[in-house]
Image (cartoon, rainbow, N blue to C red; front, side, top):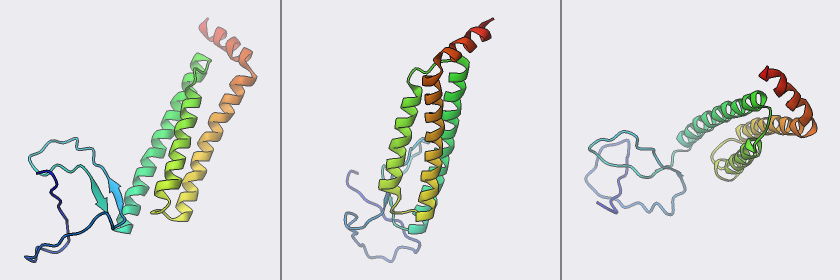
Length: 154
């Protein structure tokens, strides 16, 4: 069944076959995770053409991703506070945030509103600023962190 393509429409089948050249149409490509096994059509890639549906999908996707970044940053800062040192996790988080920011600017900007894109970039900049402030504090006062670490161990 390689090479078979399916098209979904709202109306029923009219009896005539139509070929759609998907390479010429511009849409948002989605690859589903396929976590649930079933005896049916296995979807490997889906292209969404409806602009409002693409917008809803991307807003949900970015909201979930930003919430996961917030939880990740909170875990990093909590770990640094308890252990008293940074083993490069802040740099990894900053690089990951920068990569996600570039993804938003290059891929999602076409489908999302300008105002929503600016809001996303401001949230990411806020996360980056918090991480950079913690990184600067760790570089400026390493002896205070070691002193606090010794006090906690008693």
